[in-house]
Image 1: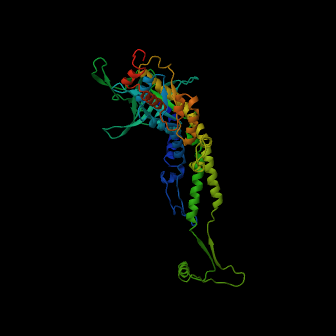
Image 2 (image 1 turned 120 degrees about the horizontal axis):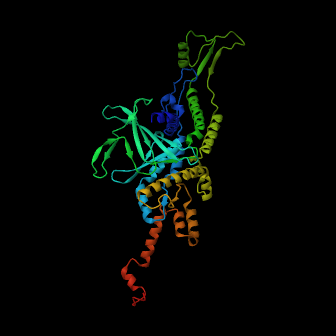
Length: 468
């Protein structure tokens, strides 16, 4: 285990550093604020230079905007899961829980910042299926070297507080498809690595009595109960695509602010001043609005000049606009300013606005689909469904976007008589749950025809009950 921890430390540290940098930008602590420990500050007297005194450092929050934009677009409405069995569908929905969309949203955010999100599932003491999100920097997967890239084992490392000593120690979990073994250490070189023998409480399966504690737990899952939710093929954080553009924008913007502060600093250059001291000069300038100068005749350069800062406003504005435009292109996002220009645009124009974001979201969805299918199969296995690994699982993902509801409603009305009820329910702009809409429509039909009233059934067909 010591050798495995050492062999995987390099990859773990590199991954954790990338994730930490993404989190800094997500929390609006860009590199421009490093001198201020991640805090945006205005400092008009930060430098010891006559004309360049201002050292303002204000961070731009583009990364958080872009990450949350995709997370809201993809995961605000949770995907609908259908295994072609209405009872099983309801049971799966109950296991996923009411806050499944929030957890899925968080995994999109984690995957954007780290390149991959991780989900862990287990069976609790009451026998209920549970799952939770694991911070990506805690997990180091160990895959096979063949083309299948099967998950052979998994390392999870994190800090834990010792309630007796008040000190933190490191916990290292080693997972296989059969069990988990837990170790602990304090030294960075793992020289004090030992089994965490108090980690699990052991019971006698026949009597249910507590038999002691141990560092090994057989989980009986049949597979490693961790699921990766990759962001893309190479599991690269989104920040790597556009960090340089954010830094350029921050530098230009803060340089602009510094110039505005520094322009108030004026240095007067006196040539052949006729006074004896600078204090006398300042007093005369303030009280008499005039100063005394010595002149030696024609061609003399006696006088007062001033040194000031010229601000290239047009050039800076142009550079800021170009940088911002390139940033949203490289990040495959939508500039919120563009929404002001669409007005009452058609559905085609709105879809064009979402084009780049949809491309990125579609890739995210394709990788999340496989991961979600694995989670659903784990739930089906827990539900003791025959052939849980082979049954068909359908997923319907819904985007959250601005749309022209009137235009969409007109399309639905025109196609209603030629399209299935299910397709109409999915396309209806005022429907959030297509399956519930279909059920409500069926209930309305039953009530309208009177079949929910036993007396009404007796009246159908007249007096002859057999004929009715």
